[in-house]
Length: 366
Ligand SMILES: Nc1ncnc2c1ncn2[C@@H]1O[C@H](COP(=O)(O)OP(=O)(O)OP(=O)(O)O)[C@@H](O)[C@H]1O
Image 1: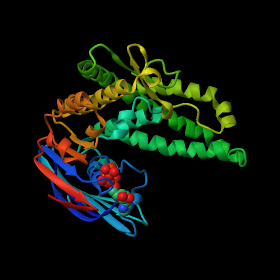
Image 2: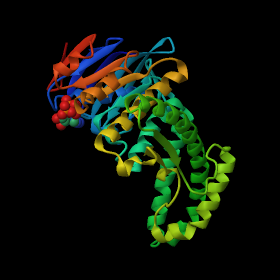
Image 3: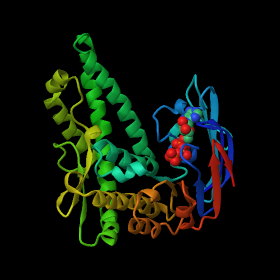
Image 4: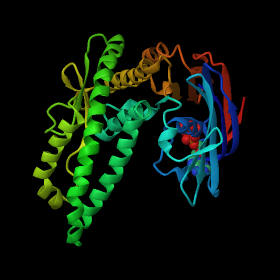
């Protein structure tokens, strides 16, 4: 549960101090006043990322060189204060209870959040990258080792791509290629195995939730990874060996294509409705219901982990939904802390909020 949030020179806020209700909090304001910026800051306390950009510097208020997001929250019976100091000219610094942390992994997932924004309603129709992001957001919080493996994988992948792109002009660089491929296979095996186990749990939960909203259709979630991985639940060593043989068989093709052709960076979560591909055939309404089931399933899997609901951050989602789908969401929000943004007070009234914040031009009042 988040108790307080302080911002300095973050996005359109010069300064903001918020004290949250343990149950439902509403952030109301017109468009472009700073509602999502508040959710972005709250989510950053748990993921140590800004969900709208990979560049944390973009969070700095225009014209400012330094800024911060500070929050206090309860986790495992303890109150923690976490501070993210953003700088234009150097990397972010992280402080927990006033002590500087050396690695982001030490802070990630201390606070657990599930973010639900209008983009998520396109999860079914969007490309595979959106579904990988959805899986990664949950797994990075639930499994710190996954977060480290993924960050390292992305770093090594970027190096390998550089080698493949520059290899024609500087052939000596290609001598390094196999080393990077082997490292990717080792990290990729861990990522694939974590994803397989998570998707198995997610699939069951999402199917049950989906059946509540659409009893006549069955939602099926299938993990799609590198074709040569015969069993994604196998030991990391077995998966790694299969990735290696796949990569070596495609070595020449990767050099020719100047691209890294296979690996978990191409994974997908295939969604079927009534046995056919939801991405290709679902109606708009069907796609939304499936997306809602997936997001609510994500929240329940967090609860299963340690019997605590994650803080739910709802960014203007309800106004995008018809009445029956609004009810579907509202019926599953009974417990845990919720922070909701919304433009109209009428939608807000359905939540029985404990605290209402009004946002106008980067100023908060309540
Ligand atoms: N780094 C920044 N510095 C200053 N202002 C910024 C920065 N980044 C974004 N903004 C501004 O913050 C404003 C508010 O953005 P935000 O997305 O929070 O609005 P919102 O209230 O959620 O709006 P909507 O209801 O339209 O989604 C935008 O006008 C945007 O230009």
